[in-house]
Image: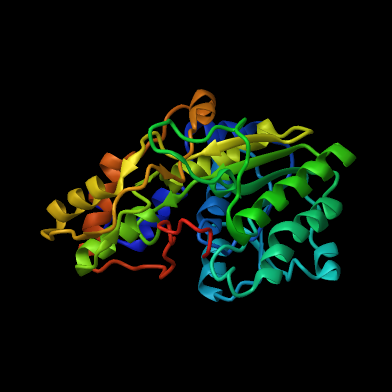
Length: 340
């Protein structure tokens, strides 16, 4: 099977699993998604609506963002999602948002952090406190990142939730700041919170595998210094995120989301080369450590992802070779100094 169109891709990304439907059946009240206009936001918000409808729960699903793209907003409205325009850093605008007992907090800044450190910390560490004050009577699922762990030996299975945190760079440090602020407000006000440490969601238009595929197809060399990676099909990370509402607790429940396998950049590039008729080239050598996470806890709770790298790689190779749409947002996964 190949994914021929953006419409088909978006349908698959928002297709709920059985456990996502069950999660939306058990969840009481409306869902508000803060930062719904990012890379993951539209498909996750649409999945929340689709899963709620399949569960027979006619809740409101409300998507909040600045909405620079009217096309994106229009698609969500067509899916039955309500949209609200808001600058979340403005306390007056934040105060006017609809009440909702369930909050998905997706707002964050990663790329360009080297030139705007103040904004990075304001969004990643200050804004979570504002949101916790505004929604102190709600349940919150908030995204974090595997970057808070820092680099770990490739020989191991990856970072687990109980490991010491060692963030490198302004982005990773401010992401840890977000977690600490959420932890404080959760404990201070008894707010049930789930913190999701995501290590690279991937679909056809962006993600670490897409970055590798595009370089191979263009004949560009791949730097092997960050020689290994984890990734997960965004449709699966969306489903797990919805199910994470049931895990919310005070203090926060924390867990990793990523794929099952530790992937070699060199091996993956070779697979893309074979599928696209290209010969990959490389620079540098593989380091003994990389940014890797272990998602065993998530697998125990929800089972294994529906789509693995054996399916993702052929899908992406076909998409890239046909000139499929790109979001133009490289992950910079090869960065080892925390500068994005």
